[in-house]
Amino acid sequence: MAAFALALAVSAGLSAPVAHAAAEPAPAPRVHSQQYPPSQPGGGVGVAGAFELDADYDVLKYVYSFTNDAGFLDKEVLADADGKATIRWTPRVSGQHEIFVAAVTREGYSQVPSYGFYVLAGGHPAAHWRLDGTLTDANGANALMPHGSPDLASTGYSGRGAALGDPQDHLSGPVLADTSKNFSLSAWVKVDDGSADRAVVATADGTAFSAGLYYDAAVGRWAFGMTTADRTAVRVAHSQALAETGVWTHLAGTYEVTTRTLSLYVDGVGQGQVTGVEGWQASQLLVGRHRWNGVEVGGAPGAVDEVKVYARTVNEAEVKKLAGQVGLRAHYRFNEGTGGGTQDEVTGAVAPLNGKTGWELDRDDTSLRFNGPDEAGQEQDGEAHVSGPAPGIRTDRSFSISAWARLDTATHEDKDRTVVSLVHNGTSLLDLRYGGTSKTWEFVVGGTTVETRYGVELQEWTYLTAVHDKANAEVRLYFSGVYVTKVPFTSGGSAETGAVVEFGRLSPSTAAGSFWKGGIDDVRVYAGVLSQEQILAQAVRT
Picture 1 (cartoon, rainbow, N blue to C red):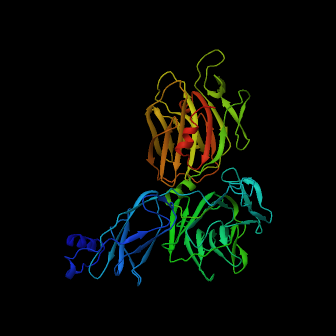
Picture 2: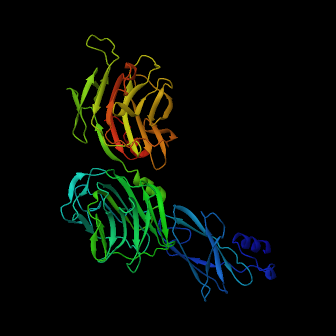
């Protein structure tokens, strides 16, 4: 027991009381938690819990640690005159956890109790306003009130959004979270004009905002700020890089009451933290507006979409998932079966068929065929492609592309054959293709290549999905709905938003070898990161 007491002292960074080294340790202190009861599920990721400690003897302080802490018994909390103390803690991950606690007395260190508990997965947001033409939340309740003339039919990040172009345009409604405790705010925003402060989403009372995500024009950066309890000052975390205008950006701000820390995330990546902040309870939610000294400020952010309020702290993995939300930018079903063009179902634009491109009926599925036999039945291998309008994605941000492809060559050629490309000024920024050297499916973007490692089956339909996950700095390739491989992607990509989508060729096309030969069907282009579940759900031709 003496060695055990000494080990506790060393682990806690304390000096063991030498005079009592041989004494039996005191009984383990009692641990009680209403939010996280022993041996059963409770609370949830991002939900703060209190662990009450007491003992039947005089206690100076308690040393403690949790399962995922770096050290053992490396934290401490002072006991009050009755020998009691409270540990406040917020879990970052779900599953089985344990708290280890030892009481420190004048004689030494107590035994350590076994207190295990189970943390539930993070709950749904307290409210989620999709802003797809309606002002109620996802449950059909908690309607926001429009002010000014917001355009609720404008193009959003995903589907429709709220365009707030006039300084008077904003939305207001209930907060649905206690902002004096753990909470999180998130939204997609596209700021058109960076010459002035632009409010995105805030919680407030009649005098000031308590917390808010916004564009700070003074420094040209995104910000998450919280006001002090006396409403006289603002504590702010800024983005590391300058904010980009005219681009959909995901912002998230979290507050953790046990450490009194606010954190800002931009496009799923942590930016900055500010500690020592004491939150206070707001009474109103504002979208596109802040309030300071009773005055409305920070209007006309541009466009806002997918506003979420959580009554807990979302963790890093959850923020990445929020920032990876997909927004469909182009979808070509190729179901027309006749005529000289095919329609994008997202924009309604018609893309013309060029060269040796035509229609085919494969059982019940209509698709495009590139370089099929001519009217005399002779094989063709030349100019064949379809050019559609720009889907508005950038290769330096998260995006996903999926397509069905069938390669109809007689053998596995040494030539590259392009299924889908994104082209700007005659040069392809990305290329989903058959690789002539590897004889596999490949995806090339920004000089980085990822391949399936499986040989291409000729004359067979294959479902391909390529994903650039910016938050995780990688490019992934999926084959028939199943993840195959990934490679790091750090080259940055292109910030160009005007690149057009093309099917069946690589630009610049220097030879017929870059043209596709076979079928292409059901091409989709997304901003954001398709999940494995979403990809698998689309692995059936419809």
